Image 1 (cartoon, rainbow, N blue to C red):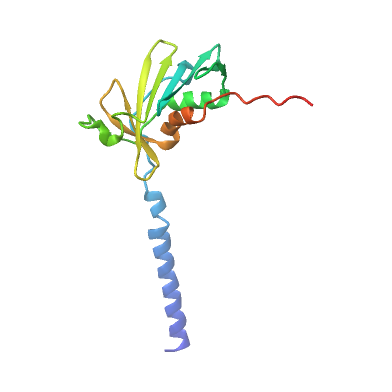
Image 2: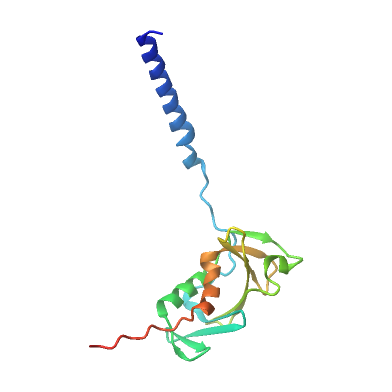
Length: 182
């Protein structure tokens, strides 16, 4: 094979490789649909959340918002970590699912919901009480099974959101102790 034929073959090969890359491989990124959140588990305003009570493994933590400030009331009375609880109230208020895994589950134990790992009770300024049941983690540990006590569907919710309710008990949200001035 002559050098001209070899050069022509190389140019055709590079051109074909570029075509495949730009139209097949690189084009796939734009073809992947953007995930959209599933149905809402809870939908309210974060400012309307006035108390959060979470029970996990027999331990309960309850915080209440009075005059815009969070206070720890169970297991003790103390100032609470404001930013953390504002963030948690926001996550609860806008809790979306990734998907509905069952419209009506015949056996809640399959999802770790009978009994639930975490039972959370959220109270609003309007007097509404929302009870959330948090079950086991998904196999990939990225999600939890979540159900409202007053509704049938079982949802898959991100661990980042649902796990915070367990974290409320595991790491009690006490306000940091101020450092004394020296």
